[in-house]
Length: 389
Image (cartoon, rainbow, N blue to C red; front, side, top):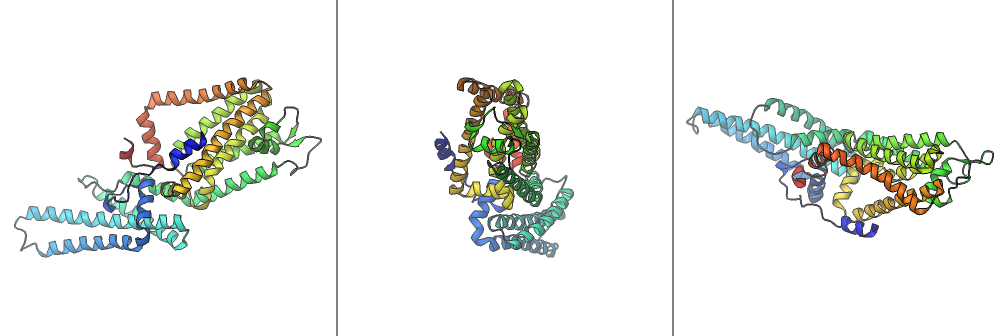
């Protein structure tokens, strides 16, 4: 099943956005990733073209000013042409900074070039200033359809989160690995014949069938709180992908699943130990994506997804394998902790999943399918809105 799902999604081609006109670019990840990939060999020429277009617009205005008394018979028409020329200059200046910003940003994402890192941050500051001026000056004017400024503002927010998300991504990955290494059996000395609770975390991920209700553990609550803290830090770092909406919804549903299943298993007894084993696979699952965030931010992950078939195949293979492995672990843990049958364990996991689906269904009824997908997509900036609806 994992192989079939991987084969289907990994080799689906992204929509062809390489022919998108530079003056009509959106800010979605898929468009900018493919636009950069198609022009990376001519990156300098692409950025120079924006400046050349701006110079030509300024030259056209100068020619218009010189022809006031000779070429224009109607002053009203002349004034309209002059307003249009002014708008062209402001618009092409905005697009020039925008092009410099995203070309340098994706060049840094692809290569890690420090010079591109500095250049994109400078261009980003200039773009923000010109965008604010452009919106203020032409607030009540009918302007042409081009760069979607709402998407561009969201892209600016996501980009400004990149340095912070990289730092916190590294912290979360290091903490996850640290606790995983401490949980290796024998890494921490037993205390009065009680195993270190980190071993529960290790066993839940790698050998859930070894877990026994007869074993005693020390530091269970501390390890549980530590895992919960790592899980919440995972969600905070995930907010660098978007606003708080996506990690709040997905993370909340994940915690509800773990709590419901923990209460169903053994009627809530040994709650701390059960939560440690249930949170273990979740933390490892989230760390798969956070590894890429720790390298060069969330857009590094999306750039690889949209531009590399090999990366998509490898990542989705791991993703689906971990997904199926996670539910296999939950069934095994339910059976071990409750000392019941395999059928009863499947029922418990299904009930916990049913609670999740019930909450999702209520959200769909209240907000509507289109509203939810639009809200999530607008935060993630994965697709241009027109590709979805």
